[in-house]
Image (cartoon, rainbow, N blue to C red; front, side):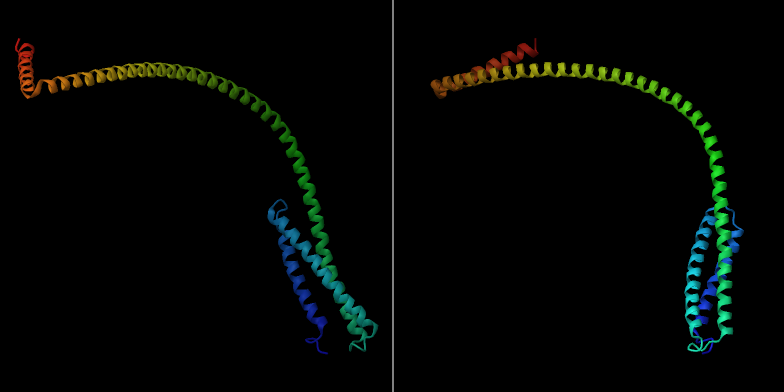
Length: 232
């Protein structure tokens, strides 16, 4: 079986590509500051890639173990088996070296972060004390301002209540005046109705001549009143 058709070499080529990418990412990781988000991302990516490649190497080693039980059946000899074992061992060592370096760097980064956090917490505690003191003063100032605003609001409510009471009294007085006016108008209307009825009754009894005389009398009376009012 040629190398191009042998499944071992096909898988080995895929694993080698993964190892090459792993090495490239590892070099980037080495050049990245440990206190950055990219460093954390690359660390996770490297550890994940190591696990994936190690699993593939394990599976490949299992096939070599099976083939070593009957090399002739698979068309292999001891030299080829040795060559394959050496390659898988080399691949495992390369991945293991990267894994150990990344895990060590991850541990050192965590320790550094812990130390930075401890120092930050110390400073933060002092800052918190200052902040609490300042916040207490600010709260007291706000409470005093709120008390003053409540006093002003209470005075405004009292003034508005007084104005409302005055308006209510004025409306009540106007309502009484309107009621009185309505009563007077009703009384006047009743009187006019009575007078109209009386006049109609008189005119009806007087007949046509009496009506003419009454109209003439009223005209003369109107002229006399007009002269008295406007010309004297």
